[in-house]
Image 1 (cartoon, helix red, strand yellow):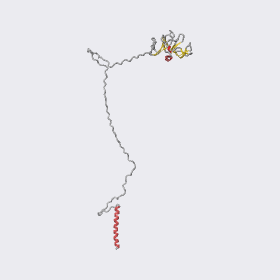
Image 2: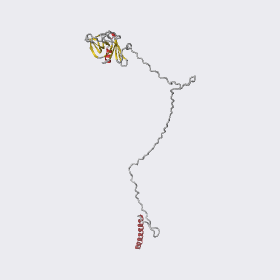
Image 3: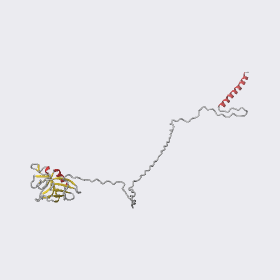
Image 4: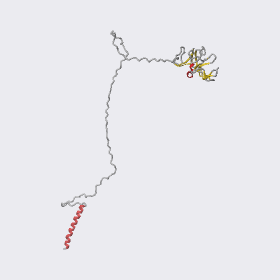
Length: 268
């Protein structure tokens, strides 16, 4: 009995093995047999446990996003035109016809605007004694009046620039009346006959009968005593032997004003 049991079990064991083998083949991708006779089992894609590959991650920063904003400004320009009409004043106006109804041939005219007044007349008032005596010549010159014991400096246009009192000589000579010119100048000099009598700013314009030089200068000083030969208050009186004495400031003015060749007019 045992052998028969063994024969019985073996085929069963083989069948079980075949079934297991068949199942193993189906799990490995072998199509299972169809349910019908002669049919084949369709292939089925084997399941996979690996995940689908994905794009690798990158650490690069995201691309910057640029936003452009467009702003439009509308400007409205208003142009205003102002027209100014100026009506000129008439230069002349027509007058109505006279009562006699005589029509003028060319009409009557009247000036609308007043004529500008003439410029004011400027009158220059000279200080007392500055009026030039008659017959004093013309042009730029020095005028010396022996009778008035005064001199004037006259510019080329006839304007008196200065006048002051002097002390000269009243006799008919030294110097004689006439027209002379400056021929020599010395800033300091002395009397030929009296060397101790000296003065400054000598402006010579003629000579006396004895050959002495005659000119304008300051009041002389006696170098022995240091005293002046006369006072300033005595100017205007005849006290000289021939020259024309002046105050120091007036003598300096004459020195600067009357150069070589300056005309000198001597009046009695």
